[in-house]
Image (cartoon, rainbow, N blue to C red; front, side):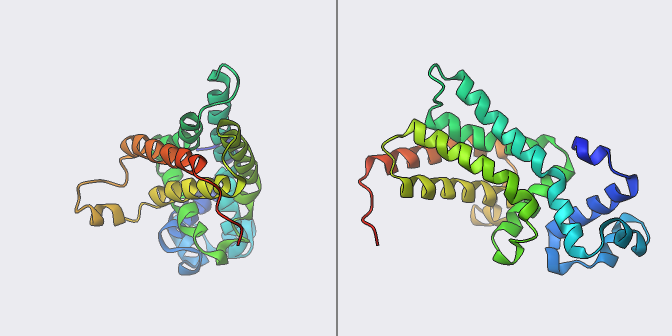
Length: 224
């Protein structure tokens, strides 16, 4: 649980925890404030008192862990760059830094962090959530800029359109894994589990790193 969470009133924490779980499972539109307060074991009026409308509750659920998450992802990049003799981390190290903190938190951070990542990942695919995801989008903008710059430094021949496309693909892969929809289990007929994040980290780093090098080796696509 983040430091910000521990400083909140216990009733607010219970409401946020219940909202986080239900929003992750059923989405913003699939949950009512009454269902959230029932799950939290508090009176309906307390949700209105502490948060106001459901939109603001959703925003505060998103905001609660956003800064800590983004800081952790940035700290992983700082360590990768500090370990590089010239301060330019290789592509593999940048990709690993981007994935490792988040994957570790979804395994070791407790049920709250796992639900939070599921909520972010499942909400991010729909434009209807764009406004209520704003508390995450603002600190995450710094993450995007830092990682894009790190990849550009590692692969200076990579043209900007391929750079941003490649980073978008990387984000999509991570997001898909964090959503834990069970699709991987169904497609692999139980051979692979979605929650085997240690295994997925190694495969994803290898896969994405090769993709960035392949993009850098090919000529840029002509403008449309």
